[in-house]
Image 1 (cartoon, rainbow, N blue to C red):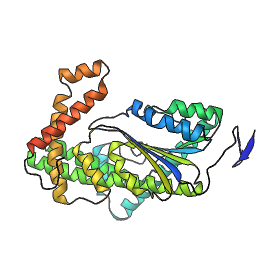
Image 2 (cartoon, rainbow, N blue to C red):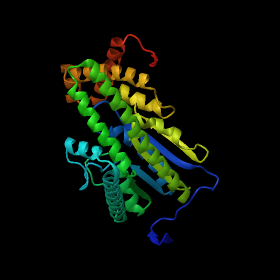
Image 3 (cartoon, helix red, strand yellow):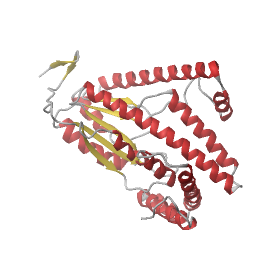
Image 4 (cartoon, rainbow, N blue to C red):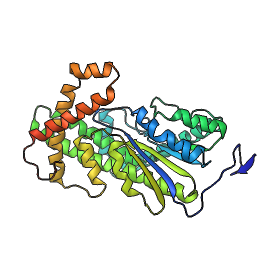
Length: 336
């Protein structure tokens, strides 16, 4: 049967749950680890595909995916180098506000353009994303949308000037960590400053995503919402009201580094300067051990033979144990 829905022609008959049912919210935390730049595709596939089959395809629900993607490093009005970032941060008064407004306007235009592009490709039943990052479940979205055009939508996370500025400040602080690599005390201070900035960066992003999800939920409570994120973001669950959401959560079993663990705690309470510095000491040892051992023969062998999962688990576990053994007096971190 062909029905009209929101002025679009759909090849399926939507059947919605009763109004009293909570909105389905799937949180998937599968990206992880120090210097890990890609998602665990198998984990994401195992977590998301069954949900798409059972809750979306079988029950003929609609769904929307909020994808992790930031475009602040691709701005015509944005910085191209560390020096450019320093210049932007040094602006004051009217010049600073004009620059921020320009960056925010460009980001808003990019967000609108990407969302529209993904909508257009979705209308033709093509993949909903065109980028190198593979989340492992795109094929299922394509399969469902090929049969029922528009059943699964996709948008990117909110793009704001504040998020961009938070990221650029973190980049500048990361430079200081490298500058002080031969001065352990100053390097710890720089790492603590970086960690504090990363807390602001991540919480702002996740609060924006939670606000967007709430807006989408009010527009259509029957539509499921899917949010794939990294494991360090799993604290964002507290940002959602469980009286209106039926929250389904999947977490990868990888260990967090100490910066990510500190950020995770920050969703409930912002840590003190002293607590941040203690975690910075742990992180410094963690990074040194992780970096050193990642090129060991054992690690290389595991990865060559396709056992990357266990290789990463072993690497992270050993790095954490080493860090905790090196920092003898811990006032804030509680060992298991």
